[in-house]
Length: 164
Image: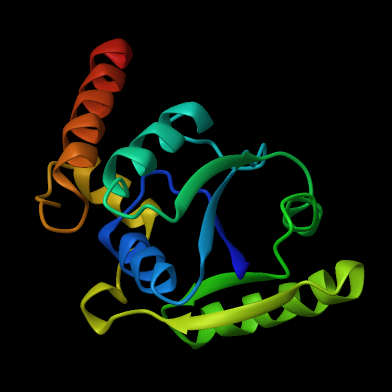
């Protein structure tokens, strides 16, 4: 079985993420979307909420499963029998960062890193930018799935109400 991990924080999942995940799902027997629990990042959604959102919007793909990543990504890959991970690249700056990470990951475990170029329609997207624009009242419809847009709008309204 050809199994690959598609890792990220997905806070929240964007249409750019889904483009990469969907394209990878046509190339591999199984895609494990690994949702990182990065303590260094201040997440808007819990890992469990992000997992539920991704499961909701990837339901059309029978070969995708979504799991939380605790610890090193390469250890997660080995534990799940994945010999490769896929990283989406939006720009040259992504490549420089991801290349360094891929060298370290390969040294630690021989897990390969495959790079997939982002669809140009989504090359400007990042979860951070989505949160910032939405938080300032900008229209992000079409940039995230409708289900995610609803949850994001609700969460931002809750945070604003609690800070007032």
